[in-house]
Length: 315
Ligand code: NAD
Image (cartoon, rainbow, N blue to C red; front, side):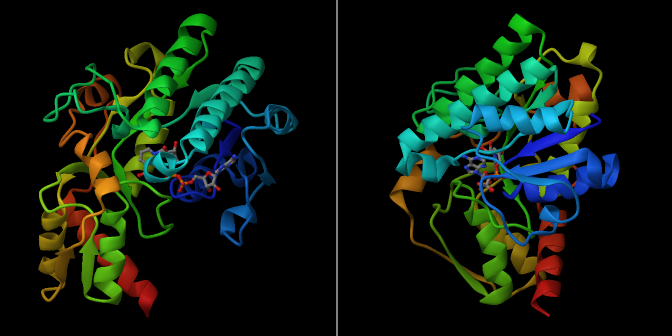
């Protein structure tokens, strides 16, 4: 990676990834783009362009003008919102991805896009979900993610495009609020713990899902992109995870730091149905063996850091 274009850069992942990429590769080497503008520091700390990823010509023009050699494609509609707006999800998630792949093919760029645990479905083995397994999701987001994984494989096999990807679990961060995913509760719960001392979960008590702290997710993207290509058998969509937790486990970890914290439930059937179709825990062995994936934060370490960062912001 030398000159990197990031789409959807103002989102939960992009807003932190761009900061880290600029630290490593230089501010001028990371072109942040998004559909919208904001006062976020990444719009000022290096090149920033307005870009709708469904506009192929605009994407090509920006990528060519900045002579990028890497495309990190993050713009997407997330699981819960995609279920509400399936047509928009298809057009953005598939149309945007196709445009980003085509631009990368035409300009010979290395390519990264995230998949998700949402690419699995009700018939996928739920415990220790293997890297290669049944993927028959029953959500629009899941359909988009499986199709995206296949499309990235196709571009590698057909055109030799250096496509890489990770199947992210729910990502937890204190910096940017999540953008409409099923695991958003796992971020909200920390904000609520610090501000109110209690939280009402829309996800049921015993729903285990995989999660990962944002610093581990950012490191994983960079390590995968820097990995020796010849070592990668599963180029697209490595399972990665740091923990498998339910709301009670997170609440217990919070209570170790804030003993009075209260958790209750008001389950949202729509988001619960999505959660029920996803694995309880996934197996990240392929990522560990092929490029050395290693999560540094477990639930305890993540909780400590989340609460201390959010409390500091309160002051
Ligand atoms: P997000 O919703 O926080 O951000 C998405 C960004 O895309 C937003 O800034 C939005 O303005 C932008 N966007 C929307 N439509 C656009 C368009 N037409 N053109 C350009 N930009 C547009 O998403 P995120 O959490 O940062 O996720 C990024 C990627 O990672 C997505 O592919 C998502 O599916 C995947 N992922 C995220 C998680 C997670 O927990 N955050 C987990 C698994 C996979």
